[in-house]
Amino acid sequence: MGCNFSPYKGVCGFFVKAFKWLPVLLISAIVIWSYYAYVVHLCVLTVTEDVVRYLLLVLYHIIFVLFLWSYWRTVWASPGPVPARFRLTMDEFENLESTESDVEQKRILQQVVIDKDLPVCMRTIQGSVRYCDRCSIIKPDRAHHCSMCGNCVLKMDHHCPWVNNCVAFFNYKFFVLFLMYGFVYCVFISLSVLKYFLQFWARSFESTGQSKFHILFLFFVASMFSISLCSLLCYHIHLILNNRTTLEAFRAPVFRRGPDKEGFSLGRLGNLQEVFGDNWKTLMFPMFSSFGDGLTFPQKFPDLEMGEAINKEMERGGGGGGGGAGPDVGAGGAGPDKIVRDRF
Ligand code: ZN
Ligand code: ZN
Image 1 (spheres, rainbow, N blue to C red):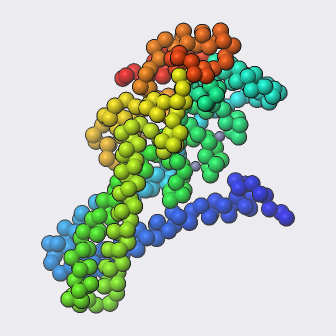
Image 2 (image 1 turned 180 degrees about the horizontal axis):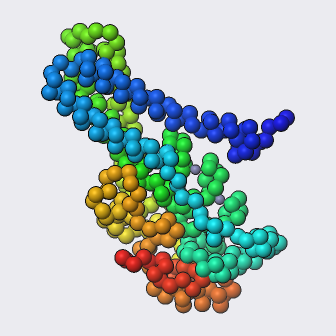
Image 3 (image 1 turned 180 degrees about the vertical axis):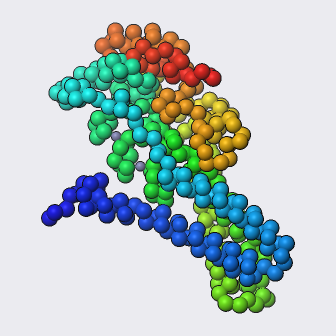
């Protein structure tokens, strides 16, 4: 048929990629229209007092720039690819593929982690090192495979069609700011349009041309979006305060001691700083200021006896925890500082 059926390659890949941009184009079209309706039809053609007009225009443009900037960075920021050292070499891959035994595969993966000194603490529910067979990589903690992007991404939160990107370690802050400024943008429009909306609605205010239509529609669209953005923003604030990703809210991360929903929680302030950083100058701007490298994350119960745990693991033949009471294990002789960063 001449059509490559891979969703990531060939002609089909091109159309799939183009189709994925439709939600972004829709959002962009709505934003461009809202700008035109607010600035031209409300501020220029409807508002009669100069002071009110200039005040609305200044405030509107400040919020508009912050909102667009956050959206732009969420769409275009790389969500965080997994470093090459986590990828299995050809020998390791063939070694893994050559055995059908789960126990043997588990042992091989554990050996790879030790040989390469990979800092992984999380395990599968069976107690094995987390491995992505589509990318042939050892998954770093909190990384997941995104079927839409076709690769594993660091600290994956979810794949968002409205930004056509994975929301993950390197753009999560931008995404939350996008929700926040989007909400502020919609509320600001709704409130500043309300007076004229009511006048038009009561037919007590005559306007020329299409301004009435634009202002009525502006109010409805802004109110509708502000409700959905508010609920999404509140949910993500809840996740941030508990140091969870959307995926982890559905399935708790598993450590050697077992699943623990609170495993990465460092307290409200610590959790907030993990995403936003501690520099007030960059806090509220879409500039990357999250703590860490997306590969290792401080834990609620840091393992201070990592070397001992690794020895025990090796004595068991790399068999993995399976509900053992032992502490979480980094890997390959990594000292505690590798997992628990300096400030903690
Ligand atoms: Zn993958
Ligand atoms: Zn994705």
